Amino acid sequence: MKQKIERVIISGGGTGGHIFPALSIAGALRRRYPDVDILFVGADDRMEMQRVPAAGYPIVGLPVAGFDRKRLWRNFRTLWLLCKSMRKARRTVRDFRPQIAIGVGGYCSGPTLKAAQRLGVPTLIQEQNGYPGVTNKLLGKKARAICVAYEGTERFFPADRIHLTGNPVRASLLDCALTPAEARSRLGFDPERPLVLVVGGSLGATTVNRAIAAGVDAITGAGASLLWQTGRRDTELAAAATAGNPNARATEFISDMDVAYRAADLVVSRAGAGSISELQLLGKATVLVPSPNVTEDHQRKNAMALVARDAAVMVDDADADTQLVPAVTALLADDARRGAMSRAIAAMALPDSADRIVDIAEQIIFNTKQHSDA
Image 1 (tube, rainbow, N blue to C red):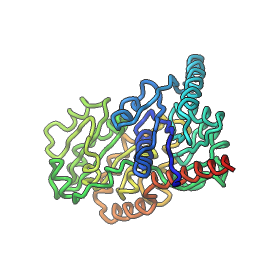
Image 2: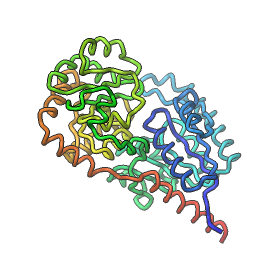
Image 3: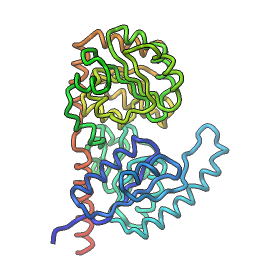
Image 4: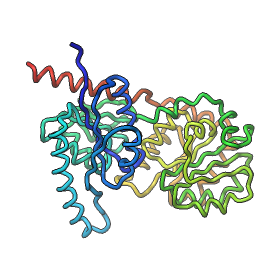
């Protein structure tokens, strides 16, 4: 009888950078095992509680919250919520009886994988960043496998359990069949003008938005069009900055990211691991502005891995007001450098990441079953 995967827990969330890889892994599991029962575990009141059910999967929410590193007195409640989350995670794992628990990062991933490890369920960590956080470093000691996107993680995890798989990305981004000119037309821009795409995440990036607002005319004056995804925070600022400029458009959210990426000649982005993986697979010349508001400063470390290979330009968040737009206009004027950056970033891509992770999950589950049957 052919072995198969029947029950899997996937835990993580908080941001799209965790949710999209989780859904990609779930999709790869479903393609291989159409009857697999997948249960997500997320954090209450975070975006996964809407995004995961919308994708067709059940989800259990934990009341977990992150630690406040600046106002330590607030962490008494955080510890109480962590204890509640550990109890609920234990009940969830015990009742669902998964063959494996996969953690993709976020507040909820820690309690879920810790509970699974204590109950004897094999665990797999999908570490997206080149510099992992404290939780994954601790979980990695007992994880059966750690799937990573960057080389050099032997400093943090047992070397014999590390697998270089890359980060799963949204499959829809890779399926766009339009040419760049067709994509620009689809978006309502002049197909002959290069397009600068600015993306700052679902909330937006205030520093980036402020710099772009001051430089809209400089970018379009350099002969480019501008598609600017502002996020929720700075819509009024962006509307005022683009008013009356036929070659610039600001929007809170871009629904057709596959078309936007295909249309772009140059991308301005934060340096989250998921975004970088998308840019690698799509081969996009990029200016990265790492967020300073993340643990372990991991976005800067992500960006530096690309800069070291001449695969991206990095502008520090503190310097964005003065350096971001000049970096953009300099690249618009240098077709050769943009082309070289595009080739360099594409060479770093690791395709089929979700399927590679499922391959490893299969090995863990089937080896575990063989040992238990012996």
